[in-house]
Amino acid sequence: MPIRHDIVGNVLRVAIEGAPTAEELAAGFARAFADPAFVKGSRLLLDTRGAAPTRPADSIRGLVARLAARGDRLDAKVALVVAEPAQFGLGRMTASLAEPHGIHLGLFRDPDEALAWLCSDA
Image (cartoon, rainbow, N blue to C red; front, side, top):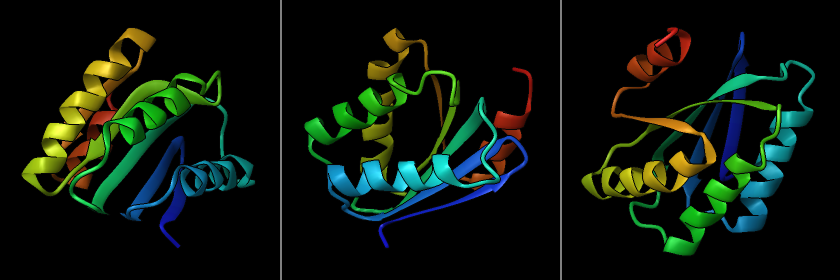
């Protein structure tokens, strides 16, 4: 399964593997939101370390559109965990596209640092 999730307190952790289609991404987020442990207003930790290192620009725009349509399901604070330099560059692009939607996206290489940032009030 290319999209896995778990929930720790008010943090929804979503891991992306490979190069999921837009439909697989949508289904993965739908499963996460339907999880009985999901708390409305949770913060998102999106772990892309296992994802394909490059993504088409349309895929990034689709992800930003999903985040922008989050309504009150997700907090505006999102942590993106990357492994490869190409992923970091795509993460910066994602952050710049997300900002006009009121989404504050932090980029990290370490998931523990990302979680600590999400749990902070900064």
